Image 1 (spheres, rainbow, N blue to C red):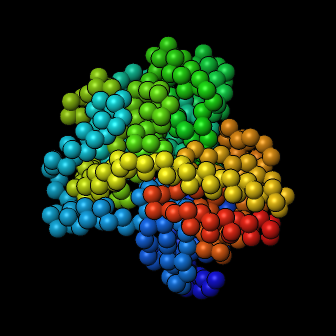
Image 2: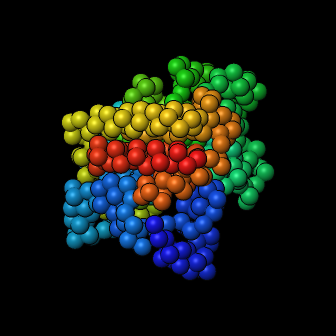
Amino acid sequence: MNFSKSEQLHTEALEHIVGGVNSPSRSFKAVGGGSPVAMERAKGAYFWDVDGNQYIDYLAAYGPIITGHAHPHITKAIQHAAETGILYGTPTKHEVTFAKMLKEAMPAMEKVRFTNSGTEAVMTTIRVARAFTGRDKIIKFAGCYHGHSDLVLVAAGSGPATLGTPDSAGVTKNIASEVITVPFNEIEPFKEALAKWGDEIAGVLVEPIVGNFGIVEPVPGFLEEINKHAHDAGALVIYDEVITAFRFMYGGAQDLLNVKPDLTAMGKIIGGGLPIGAYGGRVDIMEKIAPLGPAYQAGTMAGNPASIQAGIACLEVLKEEGVYDEMDRLGEILERGILEAAAKHGVTITINRLKGALTIYFTDQKVVNYDQAEATDGEIFAKFFKLMLEQGINLAPSKYEAWFLTTAHTEDDITKTLEAVDHAFKQL
Ligand SMILES: Cc1ncc(COP(=O)(O)O)c(C=O)c1O
Ligand SMILES: N[C@H](C=O)CCC(=O)O
């Protein structure tokens, strides 16, 4: 494959945009460097780059593009928004419709507020938890990523972990001292943290199914224990469902696992590809937010008609019969095929898959926490990533990210992907 135009563009981008990228996760730093491929066009499960190369896409823009690129129903909704005004700065009927849809799908969201990103949504749930409890500290889990607000850039997964900055510079010691980090999937360290700081903890923040050190499910009982002990200590439980809401079913991880938090943050899929975030939860907690209560959160762009109508259209597609079953079916074929190719070529891997999302870890160990994900082989991943890219398979350039299937992927795409995996494993 020829990547010369992408390379040229990256050289130019480096002069004008810091690091040449607008989100560090897009850089190829963690996969041996080089120019990230610049995409020009996308449709369904496919991408075309500026050099004219075609790819099967498993990045799905880090999760939001669950219906595939440029889905006609979502495109129509965005066109309608463009023609009728994309930003009003007033209430609209669309945001009411959408809030009702979210509440119906995720009943723990008794009241909702829209934001512009997952970062804002999570950041605000923490503020609201503090306002409600009158406490300052939060507990989070190592390797979970909750966006780029100060408080959660401590022991963060995803981009920060990939680039070796899980504790970001610029986060003051005072702020960092308000966050206690414990391992995911281990209840004892969590209980010890509560025993030590219990009456200072405002909230416990967790990705109920982790998407940011790969796809990692909670061990049975883990989330229930978190709820019990957090509530006993007078702290709120906050689920960060920015990746998981509507990823595995029409609803959240909380509905799939049947464990309810006090507050939920979401984003990604619910914008149908346009910028969005949302948070919600128990009425008595949500009523702490302005204009009803003293906790302030606002946004010029929040609830804009374009993102909201794209989100409604996206959920309409996801509500159709069988869409999640099909992603699960294709995910299962993909997982099985990758494992067979690994056995054939003597490549050691572990796959974590839940329905249409999976992560390949280059390790012979199970991966249920961040330390185990960190210990997997990043150099082999980097080689694998490049070998796949050269064969037209677009993955995230990080061993910590997931492959996401969409409603646009077909069995033929999976077959082609497995041929590429076979070839890549042969070369490793
Ligand atoms: C679980 C989780 N929370 C929060 C965020 C932040 O969302 P955003 O990038 O939309 O600000 C992300 C992704 O970036 C995420 O995966
Ligand atoms: N894994 C991150 C979010 O889910 C990736 C998004 C980003 O950092 O650009």
